[in-house]
Length: 113
Image: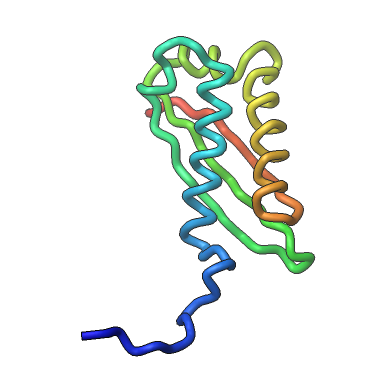
């Protein structure tokens, strides 16, 4: 039995929002692994907190890293926010390239309470 030929339900070239959200999480996690060489990345919870398409077509993406220890938070943040800042800059550049639009990436590191 052959399938009936018909047009795609969705444009196969266009990414769904769910796929884009997963890509954003993967890109940020990859940059995290590039910059944090201890075992910390495997012990943290990484969450997509907010995703908005703004009026100008850009994306606002907020992600949180949640650790169980203040010492882990200090390592992730780095001196004066240098490490999380570098992770954010690199991930933002990559996401802009993938999504072909402006991205406002917000990363926060929190300690589980």
